[in-house]
Image (tube, rainbow, N blue to C red; front, side, top):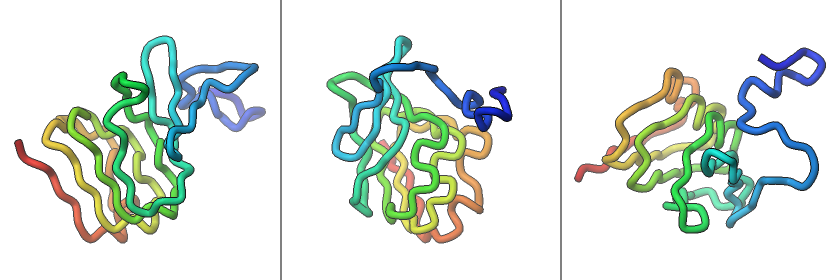
Length: 130
């Protein structure tokens, strides 16, 4: 998966591309519009309390593995209704995160989707009900 020469970046690459960026910044949320769908790939906004968008340009999107990983700004995150999967490492190394709310539509947490390391400062985890 990838190579030492390029830091194993292809391990989690959804698309390998050269040229103009395929990443679109929407209010600090970074989206990739791929051939097989749309993906949230990161967050570079300054808000500490975030609510993930319910769509990207009117279309559904998936949460990419490690999309919010390493973000030390986020203190609170709300994932809106409609998402069924929490991907691997979504909140990995989000050391300021204290509160997370998941929608009632979540059916699956990926292996290492949430770990004690990821949630060490989290004081509140809630699951919405229908």
